[in-house]
Image (cartoon, rainbow, N blue to C red; front, side, top):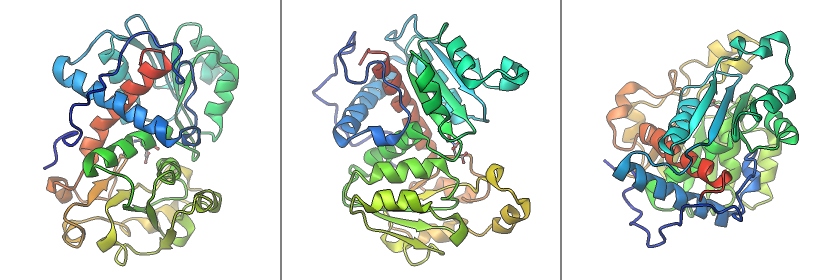
Length: 330
Ligand code: NCD
């Protein structure tokens, strides 16, 4: 069973933590994965790795002591919200949690820009999840403090994609040269929109397994096509499973379906079982951003290739790294 981050040796480049306000990440918004290049990703992963080492050694440390994060969620969240809270608190900072906007002035009709301008009066960085595509970009236009997109409707989920890529990097020891198969609701799943774009910076092959009406949107395929990445759509996992190095499974995003019957009709059609795993590569990495509903049978959890719980923990280190970086401390 791969342990968390077993492959990277302790780097000799112990990154200097401290004030680095000249750092290219200081004060930036994280809105889309399109803003990153490979060199920056390598740097983020190095910082995340340092965070892992520090958490393993001492649990928490005061790099962001006195800093405040506003965690503003207009849509439900378990992992993203709690991992940002954990990340900030492990770095000695604190959090204003607004996980249920129905208790905030949003129910009185307050606009997103006004809510953002209010929170930045109190916080140093704002994490935002909102049901509309482009909401984080809009918030960033008004905010003087960094905005981190934690999901903008069916648009993007950049921090999830960073932790997904970090998971692949740590579990397989490489990203170049692999075949990634994404399966499920690729139309509305924002995590795959971001991850597919991020993977297109590497030398990978992408397979999309989905019912025809839930495949990756054409404009994202076109974007990825311009990078020269081989990509193909399939209605069934069977033909691509044997070549797959990473199988990334997603939930059907029922909240975006206009017709509930259409969602019901998909139930049970794309499910990973122990039988599926028998036909997969012995080193395949099985990932899922979670929540899982019925897409992966719980019997699969015992398989060492099931990386989804480790994936969540990698997310903590990525989010610690991002917070430290945008606040000028890494
Ligand atoms: C995802 C999301 O909210 O987009 N969850 C997450 O952040 N890990 C995936 C989903 O809801 O299916």
